[in-house]
Length: 493
Picture 1 (tube, rainbow, N blue to C red):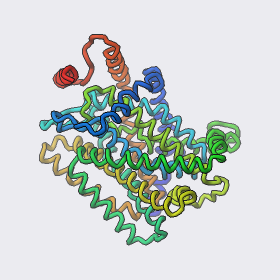
Picture 2 (picture 1 turned 180 degrees about the horizontal axis):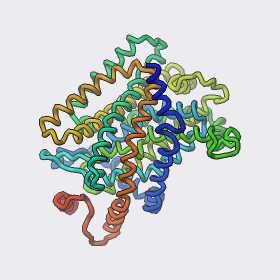
Picture 3 (picture 1 turned 90 degrees about the vertical axis):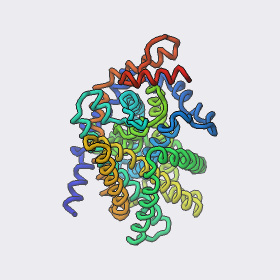
Picture 4 (picture 1 turned 45 degrees about the vertical axis):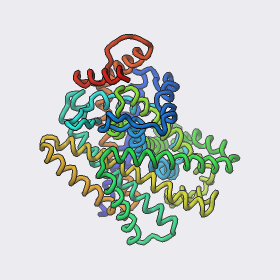
């Protein structure tokens, strides 16, 4: 086991491992490339993004879901399912871990990855909805494997992407489970193995009960839990920052000062220390917002919306909320509530994050943190169970309906069982396995995003031309029959 852990650690954390410069350059270059092709859409259309996403959603609270679309979920439920996969321990523990291991400068690189990642995520969602398929029961399925297969025409790479996604689902679930157990054991100050197993078992049972209902139940649960927990976290984080407001200028200064760490890097941006800061920031940033992985698009593809661009704009908002809001709040909480100069390097990410809440709110902070983090982690496990399920479903499509159902059932059983195993694994090993699987999942997806970027540009231009009043044929689906159906739906609306 020791040799295995060393190999995993090398692959995940060495500068020539899966999160070395090649992967980082690929992720950044893809985001920059798409941003240039779409003329910085995340800036130009930021107001429009708000007007078609969160603003109408708030106005529609309490209204009924379209009854004629029983096999799809609302845009907000799709967003909630997707954001539940992104707002999780990565936003709290992941950010804390990045600061502990890469320093405050890692936060800057999270911002950089998120700025360009907003349009990477946008492109994924546009492609996901444009190339999604509808089964005999009217359910939509989409994701990187679909636009790789039916867009690029590289079926073999579609299978590779599906396989990596299934593995990544288990890796992501393991991180979330591990952090649920460590949060609870840290709060009660009792670290017994039997307690970890018991916690893992409870999580496994609850997950099993929900994932039986598929994306509709996942979306419903996520749309209830995620907004409530997010608002609670926002309020408490802002209170902590206000109480420590005197330390805020210094905290922000540290982020920028250590972003390139010129001193430690011996005067060069590509020095080892700076490279490590960038790698930590990029790895944790992508772990948090998932832009470039091609994961959240699987949930977005089940949306009732007929306009790929509209759901794509939800993807922009998703990354903005995840990184620029939640991750930034977490970073400022840690950097204002603690004197980072006192860190010894032996602190655990969970204990530091928990300590930030406890130092301000006392026992109340410990209780709330011990609820917020497990719920965030729980909804992330839910979302990734669906991502893994759809990936396995795609991989087993040649087995027929019966074969698919059996294969998916086996995956669900394995997924639930490994939740208990992850509860007792070491934190570093779990993070490393997840980082490796995420990087492997990103590579085929980013190839497809670059290769199909021209289609994204055309679909985007088509949408905004129609919005300006031009009478042109809508680009809603890659398949003529579905495009016609969607066009009629839009006209009827």
